[in-house]
Image (cartoon, rainbow, N blue to C red; front, top):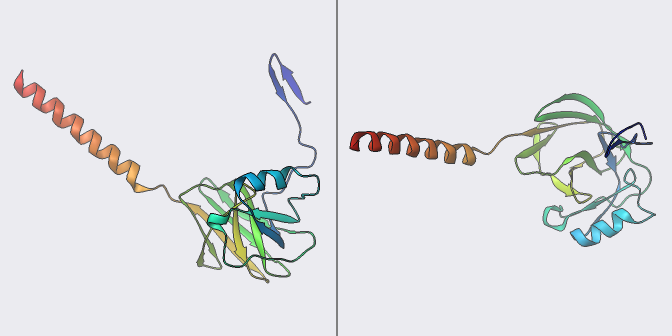
Length: 164
């Protein structure tokens, strides 16, 4: 425990995971199964990953051994650029929540993002030196709905003032 004040307690994480890493051993599992796997004693997040079936690629890496770290080249809100050099085909696991609006490219080519380890992002990568970019783009739909609502409110105010 690092700090405590009233009901608030702050703890130091002893051995935190890196921002991103490549794993070579993967499996597909439902959310319920994934939670069981993630909580098992034998699971090591730096060596293996569990991919949600709805986002799983046709083929997953089935290698073994420890993962390889990713180098953060750029990091800003809504954008993350990583450099990796996996020795074999693998799955890049990124420690940020899987959420709609994120897109990925590997060496400039679009790549799907998979939901990994119940809530993280994953991108399938091939062996060799790679540059992976993840970027977030807000959907225009909520902004468009807000604009329509704003126009409707202004129109309602104008109509009510003309009646008065």
